[in-house]
Length: 88
Image (cartoon, rainbow, N blue to C red; front, side, top):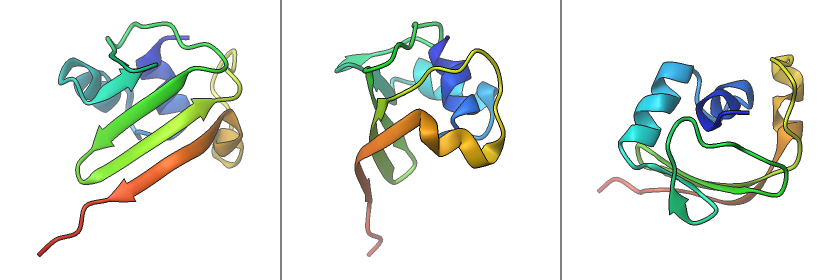
């Protein structure tokens, strides 16, 4: 599955267009490398996402064949690290 599609299906980013923009801006890394929107996502891959002030690192547990219900979205990945920047 394409990275931008996985980010949308897993609800890590709400819209696929936003996921594509984040990839093109260099805010998404796949296994430690800046990833393109069309990069292939496989089970066991690690995604590092910088979205606004939020930084999230997840490990892909399952790659679905198609869209899934929102209630099941969190079963696709395991959060390894999550932080938010503090405002002063």
